[in-house]
Image (cartoon, rainbow, N blue to C red):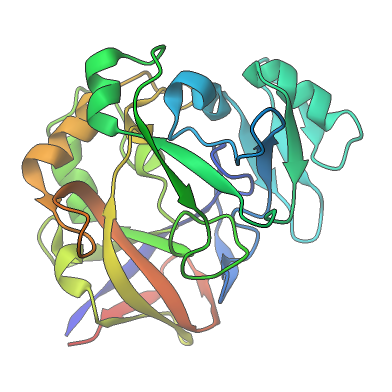
Amino acid sequence: MISGRLVQLRRYPVKSLLGERIPAAEVGVAGVVGDRALALLDRASGRVASAKQPHRWRDLLTLRATGGTPDPIRITLPDGRYLSAADPTVDQALSAAVGHPVTVVDTLPDGATLLRSHPDAVLAAGLTDEVPADESRLGAVVPGTFFDFAPIHLVTTATLDRITGSLPPGAGTVERYRPNLVLDTETEAFAENGWVGRELRVGPDLVLAVLAPTPRCAVPTLAHGPLPREAEALRVPARLNRVEPLPGMGPQPCVGAYARVVRAGRVADGDRVTVGS
């Protein structure tokens, strides 16, 4: 049996915005409470705005969302100003910040989709060119949520350290790959690939079922707040860990794993983690 500790717990209150590290949280069927509670809807297309389409939405990652549950989520703008997500002027302010008309929503519209630009095409063409993209629905594992696939994304420190060793100094890793749970376990890098189909326990109560390796889009390569653009954040996992996350997808650069919640529970920094056989 593999064991270790939870060393970071993170959530992203607004989809595709920068998030926050938190010391403890309840985790239910819909993931870490307060995670992806809101999203921005593109008023022009009716799609959910996502930095997975960098030429249009990369500026989402200049905004940071914090708090919520039960207080209103706070959004910090690039100039340091902040406002409540409940402020009546929030749509106007965010539209100006990202350069496109958006509306803050707390419920997934029926049939809502997002566009995921082909990551290799983004690397080849740059951030300002429109490139081929796939349209996908949200909430595959938990319908009605803003998650691309599953409500929990986890990664080990061994995987992050392996990638960091191939990136320029100061490039950052955990912020770029946007996990909920960072686990320190006695495993080698990319061990998460082998956890698919196994149960993972965190703290006294939380039980997760690991579903698939997490395929990476162009988002890790983008500037994240003060972190600069870094194309190697995608090229490195493409060299080190190109696997097929789900049947029919073909090999993809993967970092970490997706999981669903089998049994809800409260977790906190330092909680014991075990991975079943």
